[in-house]
Image (cartoon, rainbow, N blue to C red; front, side):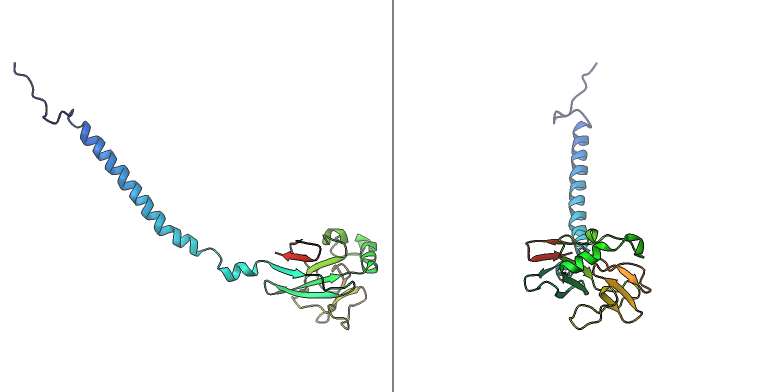
Length: 186
């Protein structure tokens, strides 16, 4: 019987072909994955908010020029933000109101972070009007807070609805005190 000749390259038949084929499949798959990622990343990144939108996401306010009893209005996301440095009398009046008298019951303490400062979105919760009460000569209604002349909604010194068609209290935005005299809204 004659001996069977082995291939000159010393391989064991298809074994080398399979490892080369596996390597080529893996290399091609890796190149395809990198290519797909390089195409997808700009598309996904374009869905992020633009820099001008991010700038509107928060706003800072300096409270140092606002004396006790005065108010300040700043703009955040296109909305007026009412900031009032309340007097001790205004705080006492707000805390003395029984929750049973409020259409939208909420304590004064739940609406403020630091007692003299009340910070709210200045938009009436009835139809989106801007209530009066920020300027010294503005009518403030029966409860000394804010008055919406469009439909007669009246808010107290804690921004809670007390009379009129508005269904909810003035909204308190998310905010934090950075220092004793500066806040960041949003």
